[in-house]
Amino acid sequence: MKASLTACALLMAGALAATAAGKVEVRLRPSDESPVIEKEIYGQFAEHLGTCIYGGLWVGPESEIPNTDGYRNDVLEALRELHVPVMRWPGGCFADEYHWRDGIGPRASRPRMVNSNWGGTVEDNSFGTHEFFNLCELLGCEPYLSGNVGSGTVAELAQWVEYITAEDGPMAELRRKNGRERPWHLKYLGVGNESWGCGGNFTPEYYSDVYRRYQTYCRNFNGNRLYKVASGASDYDFNWTEVMMRNAARYMDGISLHYYTVLGWTGSKGSATVFGDDDYYWTLGKCLEVGPVVRRHCDIMDRYDPDRRVGLLVDEWGTWWDEEPGTVPGHLFQQNTMRDAMVAALSLNLFHTFTDRVKMTNIAQIANVLQSMVLTRGDEMVLTPTYYVFRMYVPHQGARLVPAEVDTPVRHTTDERTVPMVSATASTKDGVLTLSLVNTDLREEAEISVDMAGIKGSVSGAEILTASTAGAFNDFGKPQQVAPALFKGAKVSGGVLRAKLPPMAIVTISIR
Ligand code: AHR
Image (cartoon, rainbow, N blue to C red; front, side):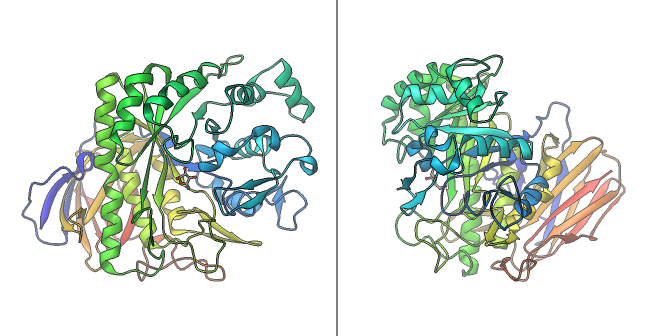
């Protein structure tokens, strides 16, 4: 079956087109009115969970693993290539049990704590505020702080903001004593995390009042302007967004949403690497459902905030599988396959179409947890297929969206979700058109023709990410099973770009 889809309304369109199977038509619709793709759509998330921080990002200055001031060099180098725009920290569920004063001052004398959310691991607090903000400076990314509302106090959060951003006063003096003269820049401040669950089990009615109270005392010191984010809904909890917008919209700059591609919250979540064709298509269908879910949250927000002042931040998303056998329970270490790469590409293609409301997204998580960019073991590091998607998509960051209409065959999954054979996204920046095409089909090649709508140029570079099977992954000792290669199958002629994509492939083409 073949459906006419636009990238803006991927799952809503149902019109049938009559082109042959495997043949796909894309029409670009360039317009100066199109929004810019916020670079923060490419945000990351680093939680004190498993080996995300310890071992993944931070090994400490005394480590034999090559590092810069304690941050591992291989990971720094890999992340620099992603142009990470923003990083959320310290959680997640961890954030609502984190007391920032435990993570400042001489490392050797910092108190230890039990990380009760994540496997009961003892946390030594050697990675704290200074280590996080210095990392953001090294990477050139915006810090996004997740504040403790569940088990903290208003004063504790207010003073954390003061410690980080004030020029003068008792908190600034404490910061100076701990070695940092100048304040750091802090824009994004999350007031709690999953406040409906691990962040306090609040009702939305109660939390909206708590939110109003906490945010009141988080001040803008000497020119720093906070962007305050209320803890938002989990996927289908539309009532949470409704109540929050009704009760507290005027006190927030953003509200979050968490959406995981997950089988369910009880029982097995399925293996990250061993799965069948139906599981593969189920995964893509579930991942694409973020489109209609975001749409419904946006529709609610539109009723209370028609000018779209308040941003929706999908500050946790990605795949969630069973932990790898033999790894520490509660550490959420999972492998990352070509299937995960497809989820990343399809999700990013969708997020591009919502940038008038969706101002940031943060894939969970940056290292060694859930759908990671990098996996580390001792001094080894592998780049995941998801990492490569983020790298291939860098040119879309901050570029002007070129809406794309796609006539594509679609497939119905076992649970009646719809997966298009081809998904497309395009953007322009600095005179370069970047086109990303995804062929989701496991067996069929896609013959794609793209009507360039008068955009001139020829192919100046193209990369493809594909693999022999959807379950292919990069592992320690075998780090290059899934890696991008030069793509030679695209050509522009007569205002039309033609590309032949092999099955299960992600391609990014630059046209100059
Ligand atoms: O990303 C793992 C966890 O998922 C986060 O800590 C929490 O916010 C969510 O439930």
